[in-house]
Image 1 (tube, rainbow, N blue to C red):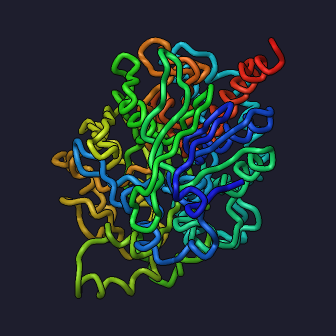
Image 2 (cartoon, rainbow, N blue to C red):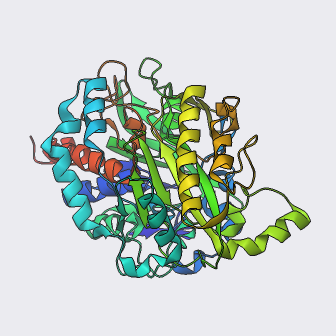
Image 3 (cartoon, one colour):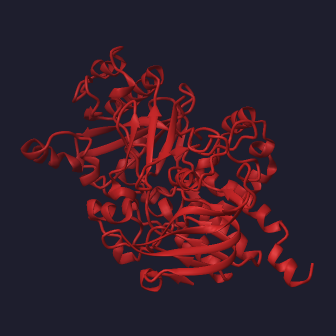
Length: 509
């Protein structure tokens, strides 16, 4: 059963074998595995359940309602970086582009080397990927729904010599409407609110939405449940308190909220909680073509490539509502309106790069996360070099000009010589124009200096597990959803195999 705000408005107090905090990629698959194993499973989700009619194309309104901090959350540090996470049942799987890619072998080996753990290169992870891909019907994006925008990116990437192709996505009968950013009203995206959460409910799990966990309850060195506030999704006001008591607590509240919950519970793992934050860095290029592209048609992100020249750099076609995309376009008022007509001729390439960065997450007084990310200038220069490759590629396939929004760079790059402004030695990391939607590692898995072991168990606290991207040892180089789900699948299956104390007591064991 899924409980909405009307059912939880007065608060609640329930018991379970296991409570899962968060219903996104990690939490949903954990809940499904645990419920299927016969454990009384409760899922608590801070946001509401979205219906098709909630998935409006009015992006600013949608973000204000269903993204954390109204879509205005920022990471500080070297520069101010927007970071977007959905606040709803299903988490960011509802609003991402449904791209599922396995962790590259070289990253798996790097994680093994960093942590000394064989899990990352083991067949266990391969089997988990297989199960996830099968359940979510992952397949390469069909050519029929690419649209001209993706095909132009295909042609552009072909000029670079990179290996490129259709991106694998968790969709069924996608219509190529390019509305992934605000959900999928038609129900084609296989987000976890449409797959693993219903699986869990069918096996007896209860889901409580609009329930923001703020603390893990402990007794001695053992986790015994969670507590938090019921939040009215209209106005985001706390209206009641709730408590879930359970012998096992599984946190999947996300890279930014999981460490905050732990810190507010005075669980620090020797100071390691929130002491690390990793993120992909990157940028984007808007190519204005000489003829209409109609970029609002076609898979949101249907075509991509991994650079061999710059290891860890990924290129992908991208679309977002113009009200969001043009925030980076520049100008307001009349200049903005003068450029608005160019949108129909736009093609966008985004880059993400597995850089060496360092950062942290700390709990603010209001219970929200405060993040800092520090980016070395030499890693930023690698991003600028990657952007130049993409800009030249767009010009080679007929772009009238390419725009990056980076200060100090030619605003409308019309020639290959113009793109050399991206290689200006005066550019620094503070000049990056990017968002950070791929964040990781705030509670990293490492027996040496991390928060959790290879079983997802939090150091020094019994019965407490983490199953989201906070446990990544470092950045993944590819979209993280598949790896979040695979690791959660492995960890939650192990939890399900552990003896259930309540059941043993009932049997007199």
